[in-house]
Image (cartoon, rainbow, N blue to C red; front, side):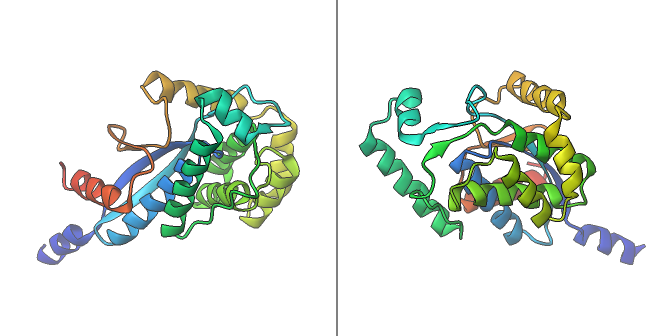
Length: 228
C-alpha cells in the first residue's frame, strides 16, 4: 500500500487545456510557446492534454487576403508607426521564446477557415500529437515563412510533413467536411465569452487570457494543479 500511495502521489496532475486561437494571430503563437515552456518547467508535476479550438479573427476575409498594413489601419485604426512598434514588440517576445517572426516576409492577412478544418480533422483522425504538430507548422509557415495558411497546396505539404494522410487531407479540403463542426465550436466558445485570443481554458473552468509570459503560465498551472 505504501508503494502504491507513493507512486500515485508522484504522478503528474493531468490538466485539460483548450487552446482557443487563430492561425494568423501572433499573440497566439507567443502564447502557445510560452504555455509549452511553462509545462516543461513543471515536468513531473503537471501534464497537459492539449486541444486546439478554432477562432477566426477575420472570418469574412476573401481567399486573396488583404495587405496587412491596410488591414490593421481599417480594423484597429493603427498608424504605420504604431504597427511598426507592435511588430517590434512581437518579434522580441518571439525571439525570447525561440520563435522567429519574419515580419518582412508576412505582408498579407489571409482567411484561415480551411486551416481550422484541417486542425479539426487532425484531432479527430490523426495520431496523438499530430494536431499540435500541425498547429506549430501553421504558425511557422505563416509567421516565419510568410506563406498563405489558407492555400491548399501549403496545407497539404504541412499535413505530409507532420505525418498525416495527405490524400485524406486532400479529400477534406476538396469538400466542406468538418465545416459545420468548426463553426459549432467557434460559436460555443464565443457564446461562453471568448471574444479575443489566445484564450487558454484549463479543465473547462479556469481562463488564462492573452500571450502571457512563461512565468505567468507556470504560476497559473501550478496553482490550478494544486486545487487553487
